[in-house]
Image (cartoon, rainbow, N blue to C red):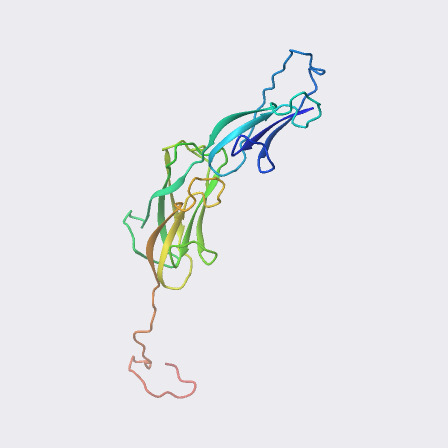
Length: 238
């Protein structure tokens, strides 16, 4: 037969529960009267919403054995499913001298710095993730925004509860129209981590994108002696 373990929101097994383990029992079978067996195995908790759950351990989960009492096959153990929460706790944009900037030009090089805090009571899962920085016309990230940075986060991972890390790097402002924009710093931009709150991953910093303006401020045409001319002949050198 098969023993099974489920994650459930209550102590009653039904079709909404998530099966975690399906263990084939081959020994000791037949199981003599008064005998028992113990199974030890490792599991990975699936990505489900945080909250209060139960592990339901069901003997003969496949119901291959006819029994005198089918109502006592399940034991429930309460468990709380938690998740980390990553947020950008600090961010800044500076020039080459370390001065905070409020306006930059296209093709200009700037220094970006941001700190990500795990503000939850549980560590992140083992998976790494990507932090991202965008240039946006507003504080809401959408498909129209320009991705400026895609930073792979490998350390410190897992990120313990209450711990943080800081990223410092340089980036070049792309050639976009001048105007008022925002740098959007997004922790876990790849959304690899299931979190208790997915709405606080972004911090926005306003920035003005400027551009130079080149114009011909003076011009003249002179003859060989440097005198301004207003008329010339064909084949004449000026």
